[in-house]
Amino acid sequence: MNTVKMKGMRSALAMLSIACAVAAHAQTDAPKYSNEFLAVGVGARALGMGGAYVSAVNDVTSGYWNPAGLLGVRGDLQVGAMHSEYFAGIAKYDYIGLAKPIDSASTIGFSFIRFGIDNIPNTIDLIDPSGNIDYDRITTFSSADHAFILSYARKTRITGLKLGGNAKIIYRRVGEFGKAWGFGLDAAARLDRDAWRLSAVLRDVTGTFNAWSYSLDERTIDVFEQTGNEIPVNSVEVTLPRLVLGGARQFNFGKKFGLVAALDLENTFDGKRNTLIKSKAISTDPRVGLELGYAGVLFVRLGVGNIQQVTDIDDKKRYSIQPNLGVGLKIKSVSIDYALTDIGDSSVALYSNVFSLRFDLFKRPSS
Image 1 (spheres, one colour):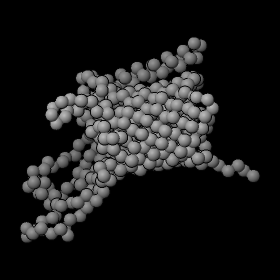
Image 2 (cartoon, one colour):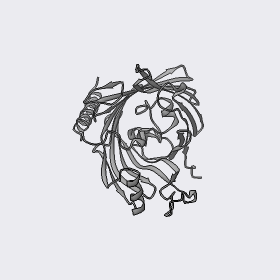
Image 3 (cartoon, helix red, strand yellow):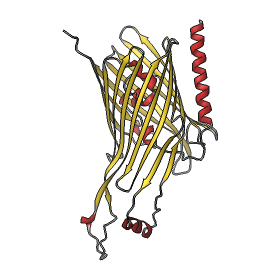
Image 4 (cartoon, helix red, strand yellow):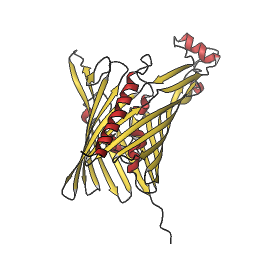
């Protein structure tokens, strides 16, 4: 192995060590589940591969999965969009992303994510001052989480080593009752060596802080007290760091067929979680994905993730998995992808149909 490769490996290992140290010293008194809408994932290609994607990603969705992957974007501007629905269409998850190469060594991107439930009945005024039920007094509101992500990626002088980062603004709102603003940072590195791609993504590097504020009128507070509901107070919520390690390899079979095999290990440091590998110090959630492509046009994808131990109704413990299936079609500069998650209801998670679109825009050559 030559000197440049040795330096590249040492740099990658040093970054990984720093990432682990930051995550291990994170606050342990923060809530375990915070900003979970950002853990759903974007892009039907990624979800069809079970979310094993931090090393496989090379398009506009890198802004979510691994900002260092933005350097794989081709064209003058790449646009991506996704829509999916959960809980029989009650909750809707939407994504739109933009990515633009600045020069041959750097790329910038922007992502917007919304996860919301609309038309929620507000029954605070269901009963009028005379004690009568009046359904005309029912109004509706929305509860939605929003994320605005600005991404940047740059090649280094070390062959194959790319670095990236995200700056995230979080806006969460529950009707007119409460809202929260938050800010966080992600850091990422990716090392390409021949057919191998190795990545490390540290999400919420310094913790993502959400400051909640509530504005409840006297009527609402009175109803909350009468019905035994807790009255919320202004507070700060912290999303702790998590480290995602990933590897992917490209296999070619002749001139037409190609296979991408990927493995991700998502590590959390906030106490024991219901994951396949768990301890008091660290919990690891593995994900495996495959993508078989033909002539760079047609793709079939498989993925497995969300491996958990569950208890049946007869108190017997078993492991559940979330299988995923996806297909993709690329015609010139347009890619259409579809994913079906949780095939056959093999896990406790509900399945969902996911569609996404991606296309490249090219400048017309000057005449």
